[in-house]
Image (tube, rainbow, N blue to C red; front, top):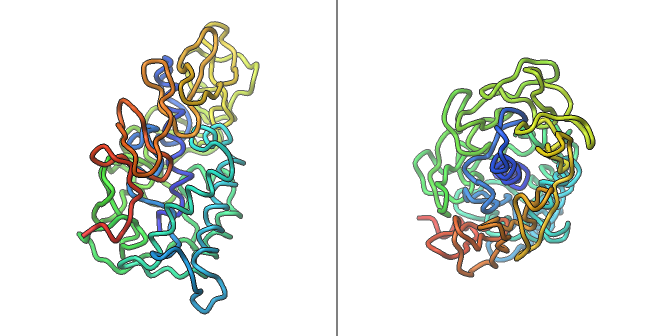
Amino acid sequence: MRSIHSLLRLAVALPLALVACSGGAATTGGGGDAGDAGVQDGAQGEGAAGGDAEGGGGDDGGGVTSAQACMDLATAECQELDTCAPFLFQTKYADMSSCVQRGVVGCTPVLGGKGVSATPAQVHACAQAIGAESCDQVLDNAQPAACMLPGSLGAGAACASSAQCSTDYCFVQPQSACGMCTTAGSVGETCGQNSDCQANVVCNGGVCATPVDTSGACSSSSPCKLTLACIGGTCQPWLQKGATCMAGGLECDLPHGLFCNPNSNKCETILIAAGGASCGIVGNAFVACGANGLCVGGKCSAAAADGAACDAQNGPPCMAGAVCVSGKCVVPDPAACK
């Protein structure tokens, strides 16, 4: 059930892309989820697993209802993301309740869907495992054993969630809500986002790579763990606010909202703007869009509601957990994939 970490993995892409647009070269940090590009969370059709097609009712004999399992899973994911990467959290969600609500929206259609074997009790156990993860595990594509819950659909079958697949991986092209069960990439294979790679492997520059730990050698092709930065060719702790940094680099603590101001060569705070506000380089500050908004022409385009019109490139984008398909925001649903 690789989909359970969708909130955590996909949230990394937007800030990395924005910092690169400010003139930085992405030579540090963990894997970049290039396939999402900050347009929408769950763009690859992977809502958090759990829930039931009718809105979640009875339990499976384990004392946990589908609705509770979805809530537990979304809450665990959101809390971990907010703890380990609060800036990334803000770029995707307005607040904790919004994050949990979007997680439940993506979760609900999956449990009970075609090929899904996971039960509410198993999803609840997965949520508990996520809550016990370290930030290294959260940000670098770890997949707890309790969350490895493959489905029954064989390779080549149509899918919307990895929870349907016996391979535990559903590959979905960007701007599509349905894909195909296949095998996740190993080190050296192509990828668009972390979930395209096997456990504990990240997507870096379109290639699956093993993240490097503290003091290890790093480069553009050998990324550090996302709790570290590549400084002087070795993985070291991120630079903190006020530290001297190299303009154009990614040495400042991005997960906590810092960037290297090219005017001062100091690590400074990235600001968060709402829909309609200015974004990008604004005066002497760097401004990102919050709540899954998209910076277009120097203005934040607010995310559109499910079912509303969207444009993945020019805005408006979709809310986290939905994908822009043929100009409409759609929440991936296994029942729609034939």
